[in-house]
Length: 243
Image (tube, rainbow, N blue to C red):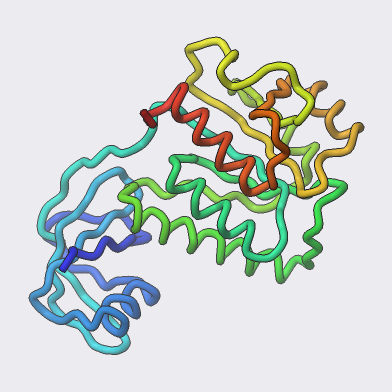
C-alpha cells in the first residue's frame, strides 16, 4: 500500500505528536481505515516531508507522532501567477486542480465583463474555501510540498494594475507573438486567461496599458480551461522544469 500523503495546516517538528485536521482525520480514519502503528507522510507547506506514525485513531480524531523531516523540493524555477477569469460549474475546479499539478504558485480568480459566474459574497467565500481544498488535494496527489496560494476573487482591472516585476502575458487568438518567441531568461510570469466569451476590446486595451504582452498559442481557438493548461505547460517547458 502506498503511504498516504497528508497536508497539515501548521508547521511540524520532528519528535512531536500532533492531531490531524478534521478533514485529514476523516480521510485517514474513516476513508482509509488506518490505525495505530501505520505510517503516513505529512507536509506543512515548508517544502519538507515528514515521516509520521499513527498513535491513535478513531472515527473523529487521529493523532500521529512526527518521526523525521526531509527537504523535498519539487517546485519549478519558474514562478507562475495565474489570473483566471472564473468559469462556470466544475471548469474552474478543474483548472485549479491541474494548474497546481503543473506547478503554478499563485492563482487569482477574476471578474471580467463577460464573466459568466455571478455569486454573492457568501457563495463566493464558500467557493474560495472549496478551491483551496482542491489545491491541497492536488498537492497531496502530485507530490508538491508547497501549497499554492488561492487568492480571493477580484476585478480584472485591479489585478492587472497590481505592481509586479513579472513578465505579463495575455492569451489572445490574434496575437503575433508566441511563447516560443519570448526572450530568455524568464523567472516570473503573470498569466492572464480570459472568460469563455473572451475579453472585450476595452479590456484588451486596458491590459496593454498595464504592459501585458499578447501571445498566441496556435491556430485553433481553445476553451478557457484548455487555454490555461496549455499555456502553463508551454511556459514550464520553455522556462520551467517540464522536459
